[in-house]
Length: 187
Image (cartoon, rainbow, N blue to C red; front, side):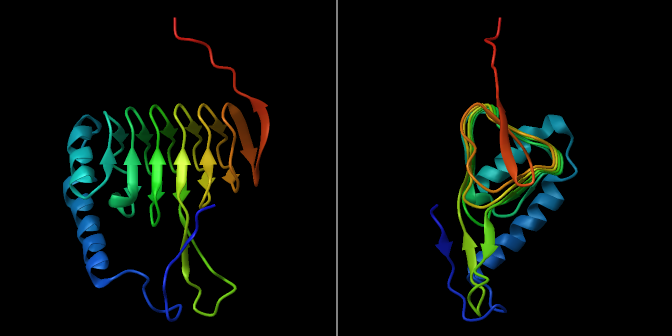
């Protein structure tokens, strides 16, 4: 796992520069004022704001107006990727959601934790990758550093603490693989 340890002198100091904090606050207000109230068909408008704030956008992803993106410049969305209603991309580190993947309502994708073994409790971030055609169920929680392979399914309310191989169905707390997903070709 590629873990980034952020420099902090104490647990009370921010790991972010003043410029980064200003940009984050500006983003919060931009999303609130220009995006959070828009109807679903205004997706292109929301995606344009994400792109303006540094998100890497490929093709035509969908971002629900009530989705929450912490730091858009750490987010990559591919064609037809979907961040659902109240899904939370806590992108303190990099999050990449590949083509046709769905992150369902209220799922939480969390790239940050803390070094609890150090007195300054440094922020630790690790990237998350959600493969193509993955389905992350409602209220699932994806931990920092996890990679979910293509076509995998994460069950609702599952807590994913380690990588999930392609085509596997994982459920529970902690999530464990229970079966293999069978995918039929579109006819």
